[in-house]
Length: 283
Ligand SMILES: C[S@@+](CC[C@H](N)C(=O)[O-])C[C@H]1O[C@@H](n2cnc3c(N)ncnc32)[C@H](O)[C@@H]1O
Image 1 (cartoon, helix red, strand yellow):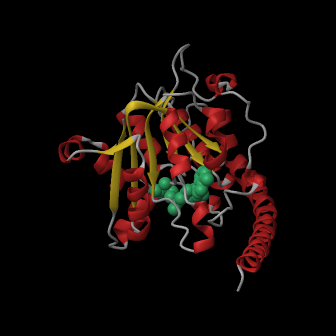
Image 2 (tube, rainbow, N blue to C red; image 1 turned 180 degrees about the horizontal axis):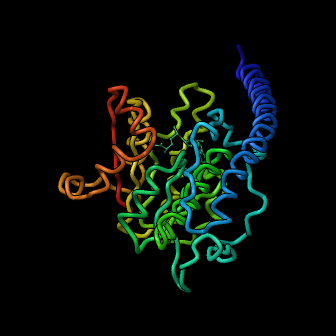
C-alpha cells in the first residue's frame, strides 16, 4: 500500500477514535455530575461542623477510561493564561510567598499517590500533578481538599491541574524553574501509529530541559521494558541530559519512592511485575 493511502487510513482511524473519545467524555461528564451531587451531599456535613473530618474521596467514583488523545486540540486548556507569570498560584497554594514557585512536576500524575508523598517529604517545596483526565484529576483535587481540612497546615504545598502536559507547559513554567520532573508509569502507547503520543521524545525533552534547573532530575519508571528502552534511549541521546551515577541512584531517597508510592507502582507490585527505572540529570 502506498504511504499516502496508509496515512489516509490512519487519519480516518484517528478521527473515529477521537469521535469515540468525545462521546465517552460527554457520557462521563453526565455520570460525574450525578456523582458530584452525591459527594457534595456527604461533604455538607463537614461544612456545618468544621471540626468534623472530611471523608476522603472514593477512587471508584472517579474512574475514567484511559487513553485520551494528547495530540487533539480538544484536550487543550484554553483558559490558561498565556504567560506563566500570569498564573495565579496563590489560589492553589495559599501559603506561597512572593518569589516562590513550583519546584516539582508529576506529569500524568493519575490518582496522585506520589504527590502526597512529595508533600510530606519536601515541606518547603511546591509540587504539582498534571493530569489529562478530568475525573481523575478531580479525585486528586478532592483528596487535597479533604486532607487539608483534616490535617490542618499540611498538604498546602501540593496541587493538581487538569491539562495536557504535551501542549501546555510553556503556560505554566518559566525557564530553569523545575528541579524535578516525574514520569511514573506513563501510558506505553504500543501501537505504531500512537508512538507520537508518548510523553518522552527528543522534541519534548528539549522542552523539559528548558524548564529545568541545571542539576535537576527527570525520573522515569515503567513496567513495560520496550517503553523503558525508548525513554532511556531518548534521554541518552539528548545532549542536555546525563544519567545518574551509581552513587547518585543509591543516595537519592526518591528512587524508592517512585517504585512504591504511585497507584500504578502499587498495582505492578501487587501483580508481581518488574519495574524499570531511568533517571537523568539536567546538565
Ligand atoms: C498509567 S497512568 C500512571 C499514573 C501515575 N503516574 C501512577 O504512576 O500511578 C498514566 C497517566 O498519564 C496521564 N496522561 C497521559 N498523557 C498525558 C498528557 N499528555 N498530559 C497529562 N497527563 C497525561 C493519563 O491520563 C494517566 O492518568
